[in-house]
Image (tube, rainbow over all chains, first blue to last red; front, side):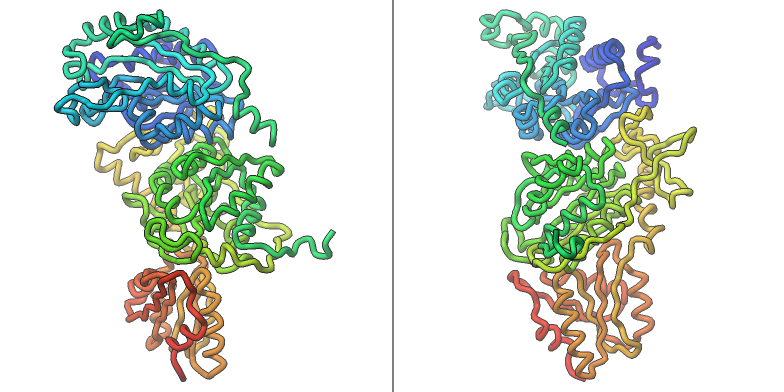
Length: 260
Length: 378
């Protein structure tokens, strides 16, 4: 076992339940490396329900694996109780934007000092491949057999508009950049939102991208990630990097602890 | 300075908030709803002064989940709501039960279903308080019937939550919540805190500890124990076992047993039953006030009537009622309630005797005369 895995992973939760070709392991890897660099003792993790929400369960730390959609609300309570600790939320596109959408925008509005990592695979994977709030228009899924007729959310635009002081997007195809941006997000004071685009070869691959091969999908995600805002309007492409960063905006948890 | 600083005139809702402050509540998350809002208003003003945290959340789902997060952060948390909000909290209550998260949830009952009667009283939520979340679980439900009891039972609710690592529901009703009356602040209230694991203890977060009455020890986040809290059924370390039959059954058994083996500590019944009682009125909440009066008048008129007032509704005091049924072989049980008849079923189940239900719908409490008529003459 890799020394970092030996040190930081919860062995009783291994092997992971992720399917072959899933990008979640890469994100777990990035998280562990960042925690190791910053000081893993100071971290608590909160998650909801779905594939991505199992990710922190594999980390040997204090972990609150909550109800579907409620991770950000529970994290709000935990952060206010322990303002000195870093609280990192793992969530997915369905968990965060569907059932948990209200908690997300209100946490962003408060600019509470949480880091929310939303793993976007464009599908409800754990339940077998149903359309999510980020499923592309016209995509065929188990619940959109005639093609989705709903436009998807842009989660970074949404959270920026709601008041988040840091929003960023990366992919699991770029592990080093992902770790760098993740570190920035965690070190940011205030609500930081990081969307990680990642392929779900089993549930989204064939239907949404026309190919379930993980190697194809990782290359495809790498190709679709663009830095230039102009290119992101090209269909299927998405902008990566830090999209919004406002330093000095008061963080909610700070004002609360000052009051008491 | 008032002559008696420890004697106040308070609404039940205000008294509930005072009780929470005395019980060292450190976190309140809530959402405005009639007729419970005053609790949040008092907590918003007073909790920060006491070093605690108040937050108004975006809805009741968020409130109950923020409460759960704060509990694992080491604070004693609370929320307060009414029927529709209590509906939204049910999934969080189930999560708190299975993860053994302490917290106090107040439901100031109004008439339902749905939006129902925001400004009028009811006792319609008694089964929701006990069975509202899905799956098998035990929960503690308390029912105060005066402003004084709103204060006293709120302190008790925090103590029971911390003692048994479970959510505790305080079922108030609009009448109790909004009646303003004399409240005496206790000089030295007994305050309980969750029991932390002893030093060098091989800590298993969900292991029933004999030395603690079958209740686990509780460390908070940030103490280095790498605690895993999971809503999926789990083993004593928190690892998921929901796919395994035996370990799943053991998980459900643990959350039942810690309550069931400590029933005597939780039970709270106030009795006025003379030796030769022939009619026993069973009541809880605001209706108890009229029941008390009716029984007193019946007794004064020479009727052999008695009164049982439940301050802990659940776990239901089965053994107590079984012994009553044995002791008063011919006594009739009468249960006045501001609903279509709910706790009367519990009384019937526990006594195995015919029980007369005295339901009342519409939002008004029974009058003493109505209960007196049901008790009947000598």
